[in-house]
Image (cartoon, rainbow, N blue to C red; front, top):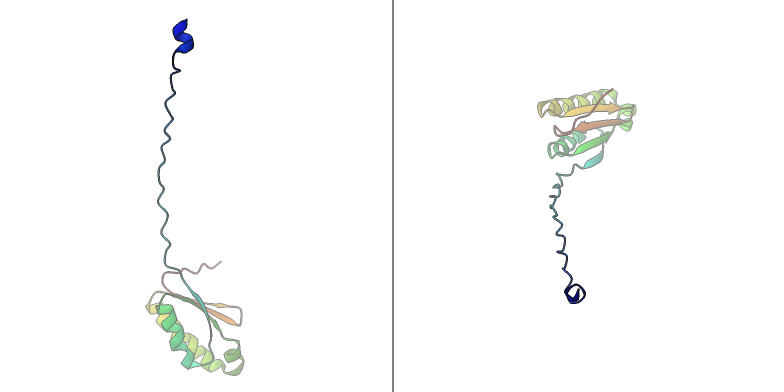
Length: 110
């Protein structure tokens, strides 16, 4: 009985919790969305350059559409040709916008 009263209590061993470190996902390269005006055939080269750099370009075509439909067709044709060669994508949004995407971006259509 003496031992029961005065003996040291058995210290409970501390519970060791195991943690597993979950690696953070690396942030991928961000894709920029740039807004440009397509006011003539001259504006196609800067748009194509930005798409080649991996950016998505929203080109405002309303003014060119209202003023010179023939030049609009030539401009869109040039953009489509270069974009198709690099396996990118081009789509018109309404009557005012043209979306030009690099190969790393897929445009889903209904």
